[in-house]
Length: 118
Length: 107
Image 1 (cartoon, rainbow over the protein chains, first blue to last red):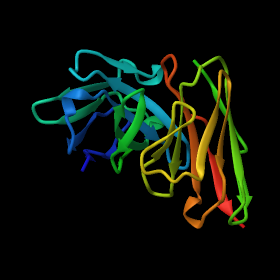
Image 2 (image 1 turned 60 degrees about the vertical axis):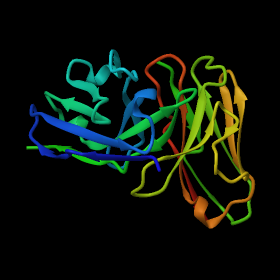
Image 3 (image 1 turned 180 degrees about the horizontal axis):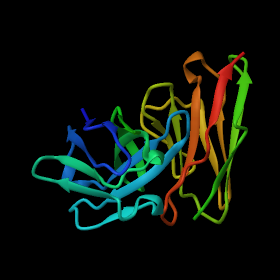
């Protein structure tokens, strides 16, 4: 059974940092692109970043470039999102998801809430 | 960036009704479109990929169509468990973007 479990969310002050993790199981992690999608409270979905199966390249939405960094550890079947210089507008539930086939997000984690506030 | 415009933003229908949601892309995205269902407090669930392909395990009352810039998503007979918010999402050029969502309620 495919499982994705996020962790690491919490309350952080503006300008602070946080590292999200996503533990993957039940599939061959090294065969899949992975993605982070976020959802601000009461709002819609926003794609944040993708990463290649080997971790060699990641791609970001403009609003997070230079502040958020996506990485993976294939030996640990884990995905990460290092979040620096956080802003109030980064407040959201962050979901990790598996990308399958032709760019479809077919499995999602339960999400982890990041709140940026003083 | 490619903008995705969904309509309506919300709708109310009777159980058994056929409902249709539309999604318009700001430029040609071929058939690079997915549809997701999200229930309150839950992660999104993939229903349709490639504009019209039904994800494994998804009931056949869900369907999608379209190509280029105009797409539609249909529930042929609304069931109680279909009350949710539905999102389209393109996977053309980055950044991938979602429509603003359509909240489906039952009368």
